[in-house]
Amino acid sequence: LCGLDVRELLVASHILPWALSDASQKDDPDNGLVLCVMHDGLFDKGFISFASDGRLLVNQHLGEENRRLMGLREDMSIRNWPGRENYMGHHRFRFDEAH
Image (cartoon, rainbow, N blue to C red):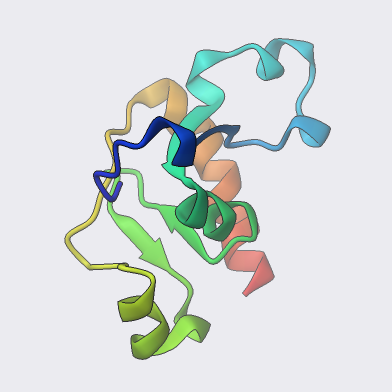
């Protein structure tokens, strides 16, 4: 997402959280996403998500100054594909419900 390439600061996490995933979902590579620690935290807490085309979605409660401080820009995106989109759709639903 942000281009950070310091391995120690990257987190591989589940899109559908581990606690909500069944055994096959826990091992499904489509349920994975690698983000820097800051963006991973925002994703896990539902402050950011991704549209079906991979565009970054940011919770309106963050405000412009917080977005700037966290390096969140409108042109940011990830690569998305049908298998990943199945999980991302669940994340967007939780994103919309939480905020």
